[in-house]
Each structure stands twice: as structure tokens, then as C-alpha cells.
Image (tube, rainbow, N blue to C red; front, top):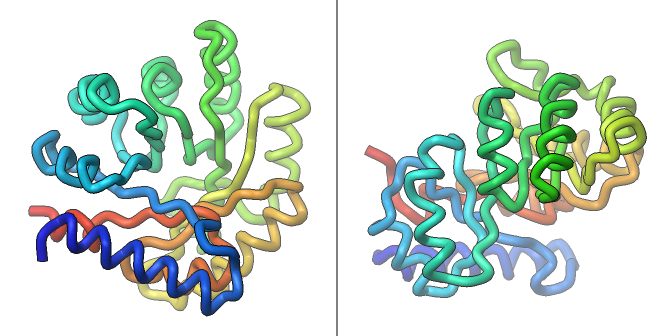
Length: 220
């Protein structure tokens, strides 16, 4: 299958999952994860109509996206990988959505940079639903308090929560936990689900799914 055909296939699967979950058509945003792929791999996906993309690293994104965004209006770029404080200024400049706010230090640095640059990317809090020590993310029990701190103390535009369930576990309970935490936190957006489990995520209320290999193919 070509990349265009793979994109169409993923779009069709999202539409089917929306119907099966009795959710309105178009209620789930597809974030095409283009990390490690170069400009020439990304352009055909843009040409096929995709406008929302996700990247893991700020530095890699700086080498690709300024030119691509200049070529095509209305591109929306999401940072879905861990953010270090020394990259926060660059992230605020380049990204439209930052999905990996996961600690007080990065929240404070982002608030400072957003004020300095007069730019307000939308923000998600990353939750470590599996309590995995090697993974970024706030603990579930701290989520509601952390969202309140970000919003009320720092004035940050937190619009949703994001998670990456443990690879070896059933993702359903993790998606259900994130949905509950979103309700308790008063946020509307849920970024959850990847190539292997996005239909399950839609069933549990995902408003965006992050799909890479099912569109771009296996990374070398």
C-alpha cells in the first residue's frame, strides 16, 4: 500500500470506530506521527490532505517543520515526546499543541516562555497511567491537583490529558482511567491511542489518536 492508501485506511478505521462507539463523525482528530521521517516522506501525506502531525523531538522538528508549515497553511503540529526545560522556548515557537506537560518545573518554564513570546500553544498534561518508572508523566493521583495548579497558578491553557499505556498491558483500563481523570479535572480533550490500539481508545472517548507506523510504515 502507498502512504496515501494507508492514510485512507486509517481514516476509514477511525470513522468505523466512531460509528461503533455511537460518537459523531469527525469527533476524533488524527495526529499523524511523523517522527524520524524526513520531509520527502511527509509531503505525500500532506498532499493527501492530512494537516495534523506529531513529533517526539524539538530539535528534529526544527529541521523539518518550519519549511513544511511555510509551504502549507493550517498545519497543526503537536509535540508528543518528553520536553526538557532547555528546549521549552523552541517548543513554544514551533508547536501548536504541547501534549507532554508532566511536572511543575516544565509548567513554570512554559508559562514564562508563552508570556515572553506572546504565543499560546494549547497544552495537555501527560499522565503516567501505568506508574512506569522509565516513562514521563504525572501520577494519576496527582493529576487533578496538577491541572488546577497549571490553570489557576500559572494561567496555562490546559485543554486535555494524554497517556501512553504500558505496551504489555490491556490498554482499555488505562484509557478508562484517563477519561475519568479528565472528567475530574474539568478538561475535555483526551489524547490516547496509537497504531495498535486507537480503535479501543476511541471506544473509551479519545478525542485525538496518535498514529505513526500504520500511516508511514515501519521505521528503519
